[in-house]
Length: 531
Image 1 (cartoon, rainbow, N blue to C red):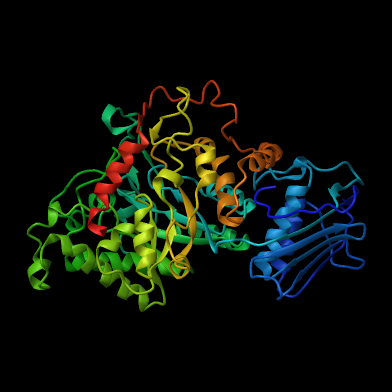
Image 2 (cartoon, rainbow, N blue to C red; image 1 turned 120 degrees about the horizontal axis):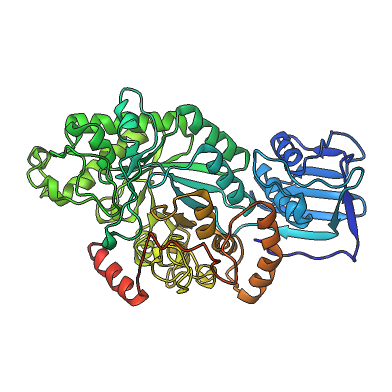
C-alpha cells in the first residue's frame, strides 16, 4: 500500500464486504460515505448492525486515521472527515485490484452476484508527515479536457495528495475566461502549431492547439477535488509568461503584435505595467478569487525578463532604482489586492529576490537553496526542486524514453527526496509546509503521456511527503509491486518497471538530456541574487 506507515495483521482471516453491507457514518461524514458508495459501487444504506463504520475521533491528528478490519466488520476513525477519507482510501488499497474504478465515467469490475470483496484483517494507524502534499499540473502548454483533469485528481487523491496546483496560463496558451476580456479565449487560448521536442531542434507539428475552461468547468474541478479533500490552488503567471495574453491584447505589452507563442522557452514579452495592464491583472485575480476558494492564489513571478522595461515610466514615477525593481513593485500591489479579498500570494522562488509580501508561500523550484533561503527567513515554503520533483525530466537513459530532457530523475531519486533541506534548525524546518511534484507538459501531448511520465514516480513521492524520514527503498519496491496491479485496474498508462515499451518513444520529438553537474552549476548561477 502506498503510502502506508504501519499495518498489523490480525490473524490470517478476512472480512467479506458485500453489496448488502450496511453503513454507519458520524456527523459531517455524509460526503465521505457518498464517495465510498461510488468507489465501491455498493448501495451501503445506513443501518445496524453496520459492516462499515465511519466516525471522527478528535484524539487523532487532523488527517490521521485508524483502520481496523476484523470479524465484526470495518471501522475507520479519523481526526477529521479528511482523515476518515484517507482511511477509506487505504481500505480501497486492501481490496482486490478488480474492485477499483477504471475511469470516473466508466464502470468497474464487480464481484459476482451475492458475493463481496474479501478484505484481509488488519489494524492500521497512520498520519501524514506534511500538511502540503501537492502536485502541479500544467494545462497551459497542453490543454487537458475536464474529464482528464478529474481523473488526474482521482489518482492524486488515491495516493493521499491534498493539493492540486493548477498552472492555467503561460506564453503558449491562456486557459480561463475572464469577464470583459473575451479575446483571452478567442485568441489567447489557441496557438498555430506546437514545438516538437527540445528547443534546439526547431521542430513543429504544423497543427493548431488550444482550449479553455469555462467558469462552470472550473467550478466542477474545484468541487470534485474538494470532495476528495484536494485543494485546487490556481496559478495565473504574471507579469512574465504573458505572451498569450499580449497576443490577445497588444496594448498590455511593450510593442509586441504577434501570435501566441508556439515554441517552448521563456518569452521576452512581458506586461508593460501600465494602468490598463494593472487593471487587467486585478480583473483576472478578482475572477480567479470568485471561482477558487483556496486561501492561496498563484501569481507565478518566475522567469520574467526585464529587457522590455528599460524605459518603463513606472520606474521614475515610483522612484525605483531601475527595471530590476519593477517585479517586486508589481508583486506588492497584486499581494495587496489579494489581501483585501482575504487571499495570500503563492509564487515561485524568484519572489525571494524582492520583498516577499507578508504571509506569502513560496514554491522553491531552482534546486535546494531557495527552500533554505525562505525557511531561514521565516517564509513559508513548499519544496519542489527541479532535480528531484520535475516529472517531465527523463526517467532513465534508455533511448526508448520519450523526449528525454532535464537531468536523470529515476524512481529511486524521487523516493530519496526530502522536502526539508539538510542543515535547518527545528524552527526553520517548521517553515517548510511540505513538497510537491510538478508535471510540466511541454512534452506531454496527451493524458496517456502524462500518465507515463507521472507514474509510478508519483507513488514514490506520495511516500516521501506522507511517511516518516526513514527510507527503505527495498520495502517501497515490494509495496509498489503490489500496487501496480491497482494502477492497471485504474487504467493508468504508467511506465513499466522494466523500462519503456516499443512505441513509448517519440522519435519526432527529440530531447536534450542534461547532466546533473551541468544543471547544478546553472542553478547556482540562476540563484546568485538570493545569496
